[in-house]
Length: 384
View 1 (cartoon, rainbow, N blue to C red):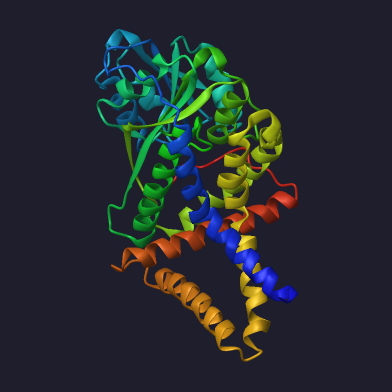
View 2: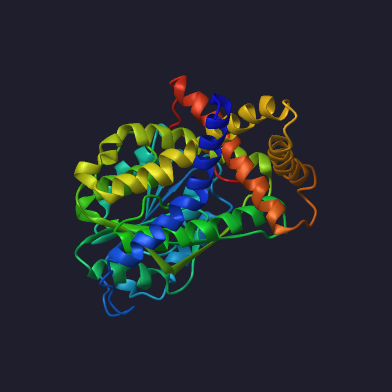
């Protein structure tokens, strides 16, 4: 077997491992090493809760989001909300101040310093035993909070993430692809919970024990770094599928792409900062999970590129097998291109998923380039 053939098969094998092999192996291991979560019955375990919301120019969503948290099926005296406004300019602050409820507090961050700095600012003000992290446009199902906190009845659990369900209000292709991908991610999180801990959360429906919160650097991605820090402290990070959050997917591919580049860039920095967790002698199976689910996943674009690059000269030899492999790759990327061109029309879900996977990997490629250039992202803008 020649060098090009070895490169091709290794590249294809790694792509297959990232998206199918790792979930399959994790699922098999979970059946053998299944680790239960000692979850209380919903409503029987109700510690005090502080919901924290970081917002920048969220006037269109903030009131509905805050009231959604206040109206959850949870004892009113055990819940409060703190909103940190990152020097908002659109009236977000006035809207929060106008909410006539003593359980709501606004803290304005000046000058603008980003979500992570905002969370560091308000967490010392949180008096709940459990801190819940909500996005400024996140709406919870009425029982979501009860389901989230029920998991903390298990003293081994330090961080819980719920189930984010993306909706495509206009039936756009990006929305459908995103929804299918999240279904896949949620299934993988359920498997990883059985292994002990998950390696990724959404950030819009998350909770942790206030006593173990650790301040982060301003450039760190809180949805990524804080759960890893909790795991580093020896606690479990688990998935609670009964805690539901509904959020609209981005209908615009450009919006989705820009968001994914920002997340990817900060994720690369987070993996660098938390590289200690990749040591299997200290963190066992979790090190393998993190490497497979995050490191290889974010670098999958490299394997896709090398598979294509190695296939081209092999196909030019005239061998029918390599020509067939080339045609298969061309067909895959053609479907992604077709999805992009016709993204506002109704197309099969498979096309939507292929398109969305390509959006994710191109975004990861751009984030990787920015990471190598030393760029960092601290401030953010609302999803539109």
